[in-house]
Image (cartoon, rainbow, N blue to C red; front, top):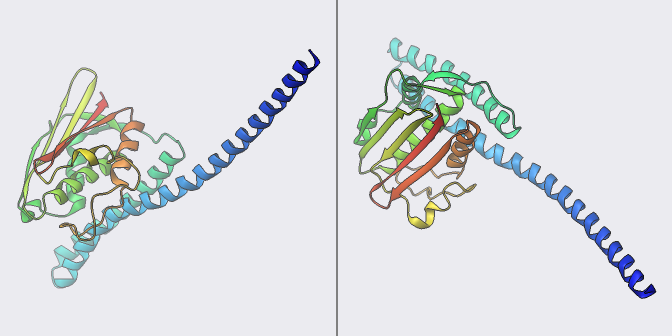
Length: 256
């Protein structure tokens, strides 16, 4: 009997030691996760701000090449002011996501959000032999943080364009409302995604883009992760349908 009691005491001590070690490991993991979040945030910010700076650079170069075109210069300056404000909003919204804060949502016309995205991109897709087919009702409203949802749409639209360069194709944007949800579909007829990569596309830092890619822009592997975080923060979901050499469709579902 005394031996049994001693064994129980010894076992209890061992359990206490293991529980203490477990708590210490959890504390270390929490600190490491915080550092990882900072790294992810830094790369994510760089990715999103790059999406803003690229069209600004294009407008500035065109304006410099046409110094006597007052209208073009004024347009470039207006784009700079507008997109600088957007960059500031993006930084604030990304920080709110990482910190778990809920940014203010409001009812927005989806068609207007999409039109603003194309305006910010500043590139006529027809120059890349890409036809735009859009079926989005003018009166369709969604309850979102505008700048966040615009970044989601911009990521998908830019990715679709890059998937169709240099051969061209079609970019199809459809949206419709049901009783309790709004569905947004962004599809392309580009290179598509392999079954192996489909399982990884939302993983941090995973990208199939390289500096040698036709679009000449290596991917950071954070664009789709960012989109997923944003959509889920709006209580929505993202689904993907894709076949190699046949194209890709992203389906966003948001609460009505």
